[in-house]
Length: 555
Ligand SMILES: Cc1cc2nc3c(=O)[nH]c(=O)nc-3n(C[C@H](O)[C@H](O)[C@H](O)COP(=O)(O)OP(=O)(O)OC[C@H]3O[C@@H](n4cnc5c(N)ncnc54)[C@H](O)[C@@H]3O)c2cc1C
Image (cartoon, rainbow, N blue to C red; front, side):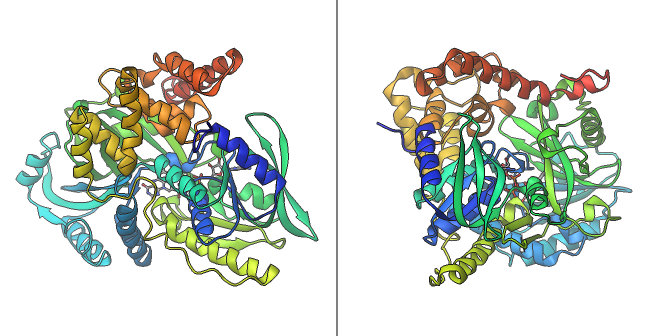
């Protein structure tokens, strides 16, 4: 029997896309395209979605994983953006409480720091106000001693105090995936690893695309009444093929992952880098802490970016200034990731930090709809606006009535059916799983956790952790293959689970066993197994390639 959302379903979806005309083709399965496909399918629009990589494998799995009002946008006076983002934060916590969870942040202020204490206090009042005082909790100001009690490792010299405020953290890759799955549940045809090579037109209007299935190498034509370009930092490439001008100003942002025990931090922190005064974050993730982000001009293609030595040095030096006992060095960096911000271009001369996080929807002369800019936090609203444009276009084309707006703000995403995660954790623990594993499962799958625990109960080996000391179970890998459209080893290790970031040595030693599971589940032959292992090793090497930069030897 075919698994519900797997490599087999993907093949079926792709056949249907190639055989039947759809109303809407969405190019790009990052959070924006996934949100558009979900919204459109919920409005009854016949929708297809393709991505040349895995869902969320672009910027949407390389963010700082924050669903936030955006405290730093207050400095640039973007009050409307903060207001909208705070509203979206509230909605996403409601529709996907397992993927978007509250997180407290400390904002320490040191003598001579870029942002004085009074400004922090005033900014946080405004932040709470723009959230209509409906954030998790209101901020509180802290004196020096209270700050040191909260974070004993923080540099006490020059510390004047600071504040604690609240935002939300998320699993970005799984948020994109949840939107894709929900789109499919509502009838969308979706396929990862399908690259758009060329847009196709009829009567000088964009009416579909020629695509290559990167798994089989086969080529197909997908016919669509409307095409949406949701390719994030790649969007200028498709627009250029239509003769349209560039709209993006891309910047690169890198993160490093270190052991939390090594840092000793208890909470997340917002810091201003002593190097250049930029806002940066230090955020707990299980037993780890990730630190980011840099913001530099992006000179490579989005596929080629990685954290380089300069990025890592900037992040470590900034953190060492705040946590002097940590004395972080290159050897402490367990993994890195880097992504490209698809920012809307303003005046050429502007500093990248001041470039707009807002988005825009553009229509080319041939009718290609491009959604450009934005952020993870506001994807749902951006998607609704894009589908409004699509709906109007479809009405103009064939006279169909405008569909009512989709209730994407009320209908839970898959796994979000239950708000009280504590109840779920308790019932999962009652099935005999350690509390840490139960907590991990519920924060990953929410109300879908029983689908994983059933697998774990069906075979004792499935209930074993993949890597000793880390809560990810073998059952999760099987679940990811059968129900989360896993295609590659990287999908399994990087985005369905996060063993790439969180397991010792990025789970490289376990990779052959995991590939063997894929052989059994997906029927990979020897050549495919070897190629997948090589590809995963390459990802690991790239993630640590910053170490070679200083000696000029690239992996
Ligand atoms: C370092 C960093 C930190 C960030 N932190 C935050 C944060 O904490 N909070 C927040 O709200 N926002 C954050 N952002 C912004 C946010 O991550 C992005 O705005 C968002 O993920 C963009 O999503 P997207 O779907 O538009 O683009 P992407 O996720 O990049 O998706 C575009 C997709 O298009 C696909 N594609 C491209 N070309 C083709 C083609 N020819 N055929 C088929 N598919 C194609 C790509 O494979 C890709 O998956 C951050 C960004 C960066 C870089």
